[in-house]
Length: 165
View 1: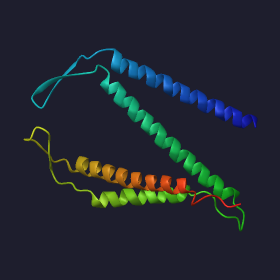
View 2: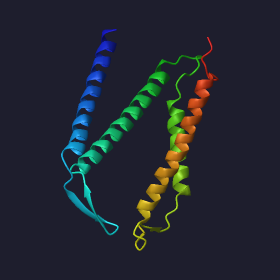
View 3: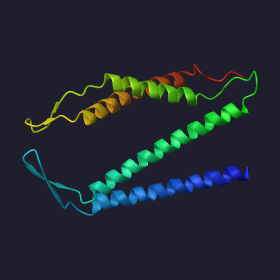
View 4: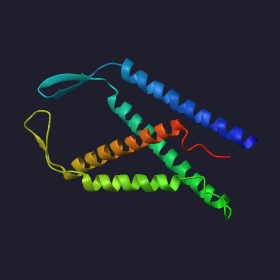
């Protein structure tokens, strides 16, 4: 029980530290000022001073989230395989989730289109095949995984998969 309390305390501290850093970055983004001049689509625009810092912090938070979810998923599936005895039903499905996610990303890659794209100015074409393919893979994967997550949430709310005792 003591070890569990230490883990909860450590995760609370980690969450608090991430929250404080996020609050500082947001205050810097919205409160410091607008000093960067950019020229986009024949217009002079003024950007917030710390846009780059905000984007880097958002990418860092997404990376932390991905590493945490994958790490705990892999650890739970390994723990489930080690503790499972003969004849006992398997309770975890992390392996199936990883397999399904891989299949969705692979299918998205094969469905991706890399034809050139007209940019917002109406004159310039974007022709970098890697960028166009990666954008399509990300979009198709997000759409498919969002639909599956929504379906799973709806099925979960119906109680269809409630544990039988």
